[in-house]
Image (cartoon, rainbow, N blue to C red):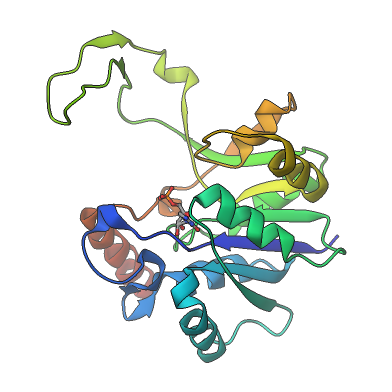
Length: 235
Ligand code: C5P
């Protein structure tokens, strides 16, 4: 069964500080987006990568992808993104040719995901799960608070969920394509990942082991970590 990957890369990356759209910022001289695309294309199951680019950066994304050749077996498409991550993913799904029955959705902001993680997600979808997420146990204890009206003000703590039952969820998330398309057609409201839309359909999402190196590059310190991971890989 051929697998396609949709890579939402249309975010501004405000939390990373001023500069180019996040996906186009360089890690070790190569844009984050290119790292992410190659990380997914490293799986021999992935035969199409759909990049959802910032609308004003679509031409640049196409030029960059042309300049960084993918494996022979892998094609790519670039489509312009939307105002929210969810809308960007939907625009990517709309561009998928009909033959792809399994789709991965992967943040461009997770440029260093290892291929074994990608393959573990694909395998679990092939085994019949409608939705699969890579997930890791938490290092920090998590508390629910009453959010302060003014950021930085003290916030009352409401509860402490049992950490052993919590997981931090990464991407790529893998889906039965028809199920994900149905979720995008029917689920409304804010979501922060695609799997939660499948949960809202009442279907079971399964978690497989994620990987430390699949962390999301969000804040400036994450760039330092990403450079260190790349340096270690070159040793
Ligand atoms: O904002 P967040 O870190 O959750 O973004 C995750 C991914 O979604 C990033 O790769 C970002 O480029 C993408 N995104 C998008 N379109 C948006 C907002 C975010 O493709 N409008």
